[in-house]
Image (cartoon, rainbow, N blue to C red; front, side):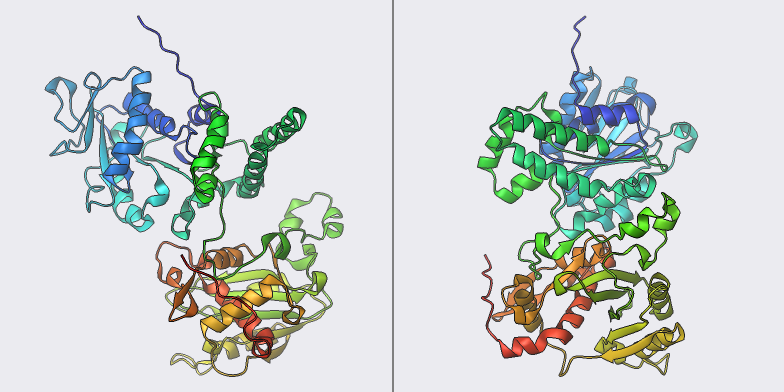
Length: 545
């Protein structure tokens, strides 16, 4: 008998040993994602005879050229051979048995010798992801998939046959495998890592960003001692985000080919860096999280204008590790909030979401966005009291009870179901909570997107002191930054405008759409638009490819 050695890298072993029901892997090229898919297929094959698993992709071309070859290779290394243990695209012999819900046609279907089967489905062929009930769903390159289509077609098939398989902890599992999503449409995959911070207080996103930056530096280090020191720091950071299974039996992992050095040489990185565009190398190989789209409407200088040192540790330390008090949502922990100075607030009212931003003059005399709030209306009703109460609860310890209220002109419109406008209702609610409200509004009509774009460019470049400067609390204003960094600028008739298609999307969370950016526009325009009129043409237009 021939014995073959099966070599698995660290992140592949983690998937096998942790054995979660559901799993999301965000890993770069060369990290061995297909082997993890292969293992999930083997697990189902061994434990679910006569069951079916759906393997979904954006196109059949993707499945057949990228997903299946590596997966088939893994099956063979585990002793499962084509036309001996499984066959593709044709009816199997009667001796093999059939799934409990056998397909009418065996096109795009993989049959196994114990009656187990894999249905292949792609989103570019309508209805191919629909069919018999399945015991699990595997999606490769999941960032390319339409989330709405997954919810409407794929999820409903992952049901049934519980009388045969419900004793298994992974019955009706899902496994999403993907390289790093760039566009907002694919960012839904990153939501599966939220349990790291919710259950263990681990900010896996920030740590992974830091790891990748250190890895990039590593590629250019030639001094042996410096290389070893950098490598050890990467190993230390990697341990701080060691994968674990959530309370809901979900596993999330980041990885790249540096986790697979036993199968990929170090020269792989240097070679691919020379062959690929810089952006593709960062995303596809290094698995870097990119928070900003190309041709972005807002040119934020992250190292200058985003700050994370925003906690008042003089207050936090005296709590003596009473974590619930730290977690209490009040401004007492906020280093960037002056309790004895007024706050500035601005809204973006809407039927799908209402947003509130809080600004205050702070470090280096910057106008800092120090906090954000949002509510998603029920049945299209704008929940004014709810968002005002969130603000009032958070800032209940503010000594100066003055707010400068920058008015959204849309909020001045009277609606048929209420004699008072949104702004009037919001200001009344603030009065009732003992706040002194000073309303402000920009002069003139609503400005064109082109003018707002030019104003932002001048402010964010910080090369003219007359425009002032802004800052962003990276801990508290995450949705604002997502909104701004994922907003594209477009050119039409020699004018710049904002792409607001995200507000119509059913996939992009509305707190990450352009609403928060719109709110920031209002307060910045009101405060600084006169400077643009006084100094027109300070900015050079960007060039579009």
